[in-house]
Length: 333
Image 1 (cartoon, rainbow, N blue to C red):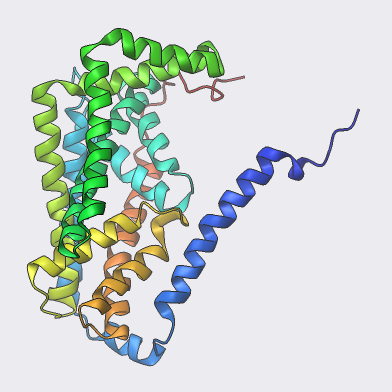
Image 2 (cartoon, rainbow, N blue to C red):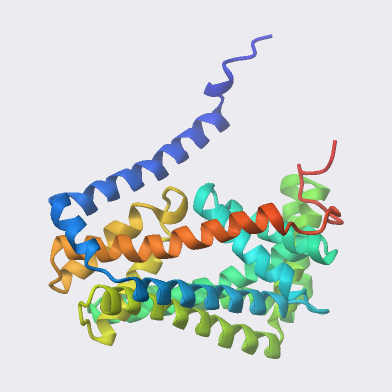
């Protein structure tokens, strides 16, 4: 019987094409960001930055990460331990910076499960809800930017998509039989394991649809992203001294955040530089200064948390017990 060539199998080809697309986007964005920028002037611009703004940016980043741990810890009843939530946050961010396919989100769910004796599907649902709220805040930022640039039609499309997501979750919460049918659909696609996996994941999401939990998630998510905005302000105004008005700082922050949703290499290297530098140049900032402050801000966010996450993984691992229901395909053989 013909076995075929393994790397030419359809799944392998599809995966290779997707990987090539992501890294191709990053390379093209890096080319665009660095095109026409003299390296001598770029280096001179970076050398003008002082240490205190960088330390301030890093400090604000870790305050935001700690608040992310607090947010995670209260997304379950009984609450998760802060230690496990904070360590999972750092480890997940670090893994996302070095591995593709948002592997850090899966690692975060596994960490939370092992550290608190919870099923993986439950903690994955919690992580999904956390990401869903972050996407909501990014959507609000995008609405601000699109409204500012006069793209009113795109604002309407964003609002419709956002409302549709919330409508589906609300419908599942109010009518559990509909949620059961949705879960059974997964069973038809992939069998009992996938059905159970989808059911417990969706349960983790719907558990957070209570009014008090939604209010908690809204307040903490907005605060976290406000701190991210302070990071951007420290980079463009305190470090680079660009003196941008608050509305322009918010616009730069919105574009930089949205750029990270695009398919690219881990850590959004390339797309962050291209989009953030482009919007800075649109505000009259010189090409070398725009790229310099973009690199400074990105590396101040990228390097410290990657190192911190690596330290956490090495010296503060989660509990050694396995999650009660590991994801399909991860069971011990």
